[in-house]
Length: 183
Image 1 (tube, rainbow, N blue to C red):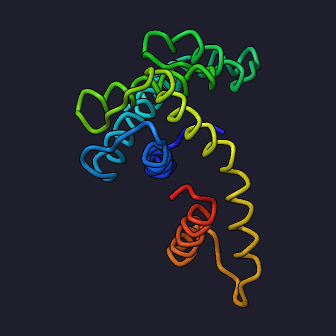
Image 2 (spheres, rainbow, N blue to C red):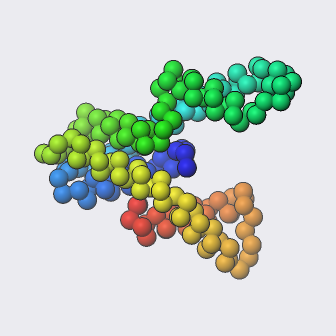
């Protein structure tokens, strides 16, 4: 599962809750500023990846005729180009390394903005942030499956993509997150 903007607020929320529950971290200005700062850092990372993918798509479009002529696998080419350009865009493709980097950036921002305080080694606090990211990302599929299961039991059938479906999905998704202590 890759990071997406739709997940940023939920991940940020999970980070804030986990930091607030950590006995060695003190939230100095409430949860909301922590959530906002973490969300900002996550969204910035996602924007970098989006810019990278847009550039890869541009390059593929420029060579579309040649790609078609040699019958190359477009997905494989996309990945190869993305991998090659990733360092130039500051994007880490390995998910473990990316989450670790994100946890460092979030911790640095929270500390610089004086949103948290702690008396333990930095790595101990960073590991709380990292674990929050990993926990959310690992749980996403399970949460989505639970929500889809609930929707399938509605008396009237909801049509995916409609406003009504999206609102109900969102409400059930957040309810499931609350149940799991992620919100």
